[in-house]
Image (cartoon, rainbow, N blue to C red; front, side, top):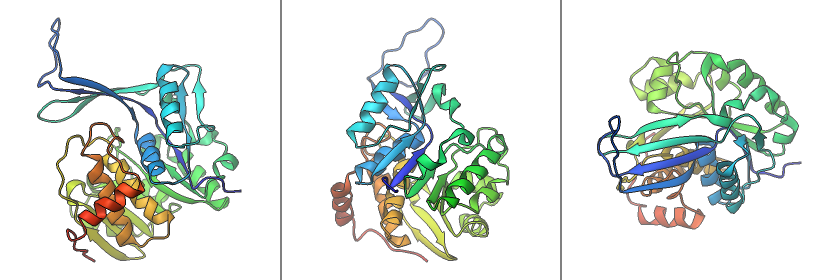
Length: 315
């Protein structure tokens, strides 16, 4: 029985966002900053919140510490209607924390993975997860957990769910081509421009996406402020981004994913899904925190009405 529209599997942590400084303090030095704020973070968590804001019935599957930060994340999830019954409490690690510094030049991070490191795809309850008609997976790390992911996707496909995946950054630097095997069982495969170039070894983004199209029928590449490009059933569609003032780009890609997959789950065509994704990404960067600026459905529709003359689709 499908009781969820989407089950999201992956990381959830606390983001501490630090504003108003231009250098890291030296040993023995104290620096006062303009502001420090706390938000729900982690790519999977930000995606889940953004999708739930749009009215999708979401359940989250991950690992949190049994601590105040873990309780805070659960409470925030429940505030947006996200089902938390699949979340496991760790008795080993605390909830993960990422400190995001926002100096004038570029963002830097200090991250403690914490309980997120305990999430393994080969220990999941697939029957429980298949209560969702769609499953979104994150956290792929190439050869380090490739076999787990391939086995998981095959198990879930046998249970009749559709799948999407955002691979994220490969911090090993290997960019192993085994990712193309994973793509074969994924219904919508998403990544950003830099990741696509690393995995394919190609610089031209259309070459990248056509190469990946040999393995997956539906691939989406995010291009940041330049918008996004999608290849579905050998048809290429590209939409430019919206012109907005960026305050904080944290989570913009996850917000794009939510908008795009909102379209996909509601049977929209690629062009409409790209519009939704670009709009959610644009709204996300207008506020501090990865999900603070992401819209509800009415906010998304209002933004699209305001910018309806801004786009020309290229196929």
